[in-house]
Image (tube, rainbow over the protein chains, first blue to last red):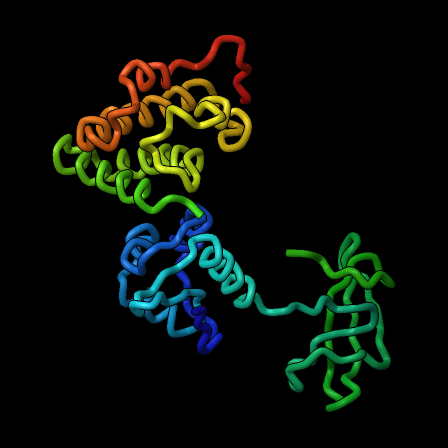
Length: 144
Length: 118
């Protein structure tokens, strides 16, 4: 019988992220999998309570499929990544509203080389919004 | 699904290597990585019938597992597997009575004419 309880995110250490893909396609006991991943068994049981895939046999013993567990660890890593929103042309980040806004009345001034400075107003609060851009008129921001 | 008894024997071998031969944790970790390929080769079949498997271990390694290994690493992997099989035959003589020593000795020899993928 398969069990899935809460599916909230767990803190997974880097060591586990590296070791999890090496788990074999077989059924492990919690102790074995904890030993292979180098984490305390209590931590592993905590992950099982937070939705890590496992099953119980008729004697109520817990069994964990190595490959399914590795996939779950990978999902946890991906779930932790926050979605990003690259700034589009004419957009800027208003420090007062703490949000991405469409810049109004924008002025572009060259700074140096390909770098230019875009300055305008926030349509929500009316505050000044600044943004650096490559090649005046382009929507690209310098990366890094 | 892999045979759990094979996995348990590998774990026992690693524990024995650590306690009796005093192998370091790094060596144990390397040995385990090498023996994983043996477990994958055996699949759901017991290692006690390894001599009757359709594919030989070296062929399996060439086909599936160890793409990107150089010859030295491959030889080291085969040596670890040979060490394990010798140990398991000594420790479980009845279960492994069908596996001949000559077959185990041949395991670590890479067949001539095989290309090593680098």
